[in-house]
Structure formats: structure tokens, C-alpha cells
Length: 83
Image (cartoon, rainbow, N blue to C red; front, side, top):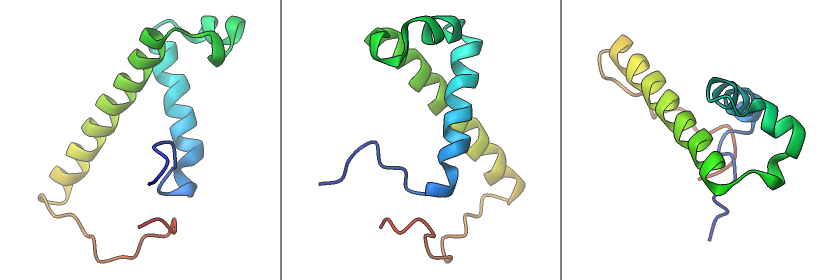
């Protein structure tokens, strides 16, 4: 069973962290994170951040698919080592 927190593309880890803080800032939660830390954030707050991240990633994927005429090239092997 895989860990849900495993990043499939380790090279994307930094970008995901940036996205997390970007969404937190947009929601006005960045000050709370700095003051309380992630461990003291409520489930609702963290869920809002995660949901915002997913929405942004979907918008990004849709834009990429539109730019590629709906084609997704899955022929390249995964560089992250996960399957």
C-alpha cells in the first residue's frame, strides 16, 4: 500500500511546496501558519489549502491539454521511480 503523501515526481516537490504556500496566502492563512505552524492548523484550514491546490493543478492540466490539442504523451517513463 502506498503512502498518500508520496510525491510521484520528486523533482516537483519544491513546486508543490510553493503552490501550498501560494494558496495559503490567497486564503489569508499564511500568517496563521507562521504563528501556529502546520501542526496546529485545523482540518478545515488545511483542507481549504489542499482543495485550492487541486483546483489550481486541474486548471493547469486543462490548459496544458488544450495547448497540446488534448494529447497527453505518456510514452516517456516516469522519472520519479514510482509506478
